[in-house]
Length: 174
Image (cartoon, rainbow, N blue to C red; front, side, top):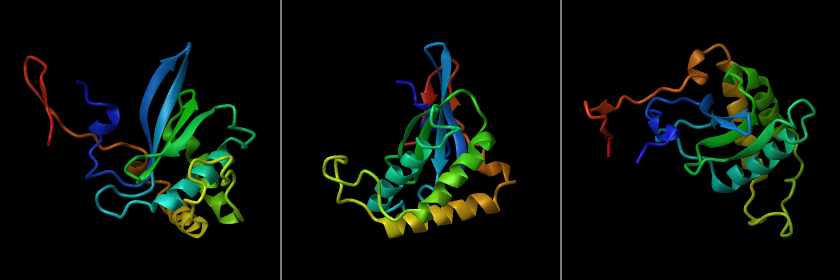
């Protein structure tokens, strides 16, 4: 089986930032999946589940209402490891080109008074939210992005090196 692209990223070296995870040609256009990494994997605690859920609701709502971007947003959702999010956008842009959008989205969390869609009718687990913690995580990440705006490490994935034999067989760490 082929290793999926997100598993070829060296998670021991990745820092919080915005990275291109993959690009796919779909229906004559390009869809780009970005890794929005909020926490250092395996070094920092993962994001609290309830806060992650709240961030998903708040930032998805922000992105799908932004007049300049709403028609390009395909998906916003959490990573299973709870260290960040994926955003899928129409088109092919470098991470630096969506920096301002994501910084504004994370900054907007501080203004939230409630969680959109947090009702039994609108959400599959409407009681699993934590707005104060979501605000804390969002501010922490936005401050980090601001402080590291000129650091190329927040835009470039560190790739793992894999041994490949002459017949094309790949060996992976276990």
